[in-house]
Structures are given as C-alpha cells and as structure tokens.
Amino acid sequence: METENSYYIVMDLVQGNEFVKYLTKRKQLDENETKKYIRQIVSAVDHMHHARVIHRD
Image 1 (spheres, helix red, strand yellow):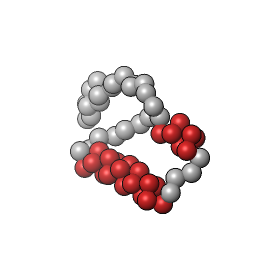
Image 2: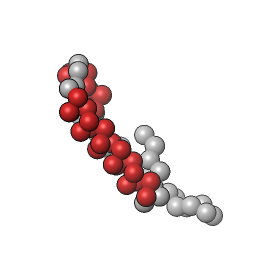
Image 3: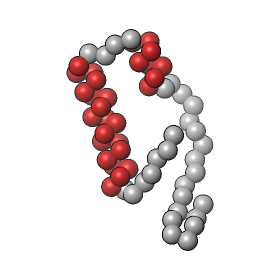
Image 4: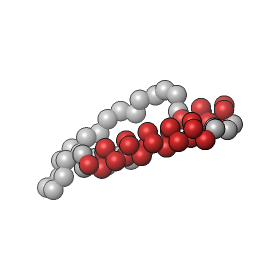
C-alpha cells in the first residue's frame, strides 16, 4: 500500500507458538532467561526503529 508520504507493507500473520503460551507453561523465568528475552525484544524494536519500520500486532 502507498499514500502520498508513506509506503506500507502488509503481511499475513504467521501462526505458531506465542511467547505468552511459553510463559504460561513455565509460570516463572529466572533472571538470566528474563534478561535474554528482554535483550532480544529491545534489539528487535531498536532495529525496526532504525530501519524506520513500524510494527503493530
């Protein structure tokens, strides 16, 4: 899709395991595992920000 000032890419939702399901099964994450996932999420958002990508789920 395209507007006068922006371009948009619309993609299908990929079905699969969701992080919330993983958390529900685990009940609790230890500190190191929590840090690992937080780093991954922040890194992905930072990468999208620098690429000027907006993600909405």
